[in-house]
Image 1 (cartoon, rainbow, N blue to C red):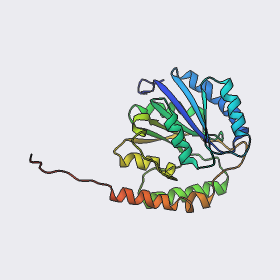
Image 2 (cartoon, rainbow, N blue to C red):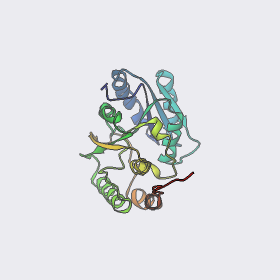
Image 3 (tube, helix red, strand yellow):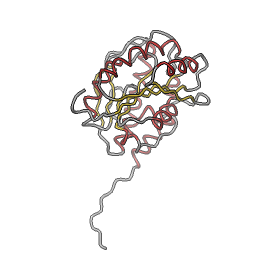
Length: 243
C-alpha cells in the first residue's frame, strides 16, 4: 500500500438488498485484494431487509470467513440507513463503501486508498458506465439535476465506491436519502474531497434497484433539503472580540 494511505485497519461496508447470487463471487474477489494490501481489514455486509436468501447466505459466508461480519436490519430501510448502520459498526480508521452487485471493481480500492492520506473522502467516478441505456440515462439526468440544484462539482456523485477517513465520517449526520450527497455534505463541513476514475462492470445477476422514479423524483425532497442546508449554513467571521 502507498505510504500516502493512513489505513492501519480497513473496513469495507457493503449494503445489500436481494443480492444473493452476487455475494460469494464478490467475497471471493474482494478478500484477495484486501489481503494484498497488507493491513488489518473487515468486511461488513448490511442486509437491508432482503426478501431472498441473502440473510442465510451471508450467515454461511460469515461462518467461513473470519473477516466478514453481518448486520441485519429489521426491514428494508433504504441505502442511507444501511450505510449508516455499517458506519456505526465499523472499527477501521478508513472505511470504503461499495455496492454488492459486482459492478464496482474491488481492484479499484487501492486507487482510492492512494489518495485518502491527502483527503477526507475519495469518490469513484464511473467514467465508462456499463449499465443498460435506460439506467445510464436516468443516472445522467439525476446527476445533472443534482449539480444544478445543489451546485456540486462532482461528475458521478452517485457512485457507491468511496473511501472515507472514519474520523471525518463521524462528523456527518445522515438522514434518509442522504447517501446520494455524501461528497457535498463533506465539503459543507470543510472537509477535503477528491474524485478518481474507477472501473465499472456490467451487472451479472439480478436487477437494478434504481430507475428514473427513485433516482430523481424520490430523491427530490432530499436534494432540496441539501440545497437549503448548503445555502443557509452559518458562515461568518468575528472581526473583534473584547473580553
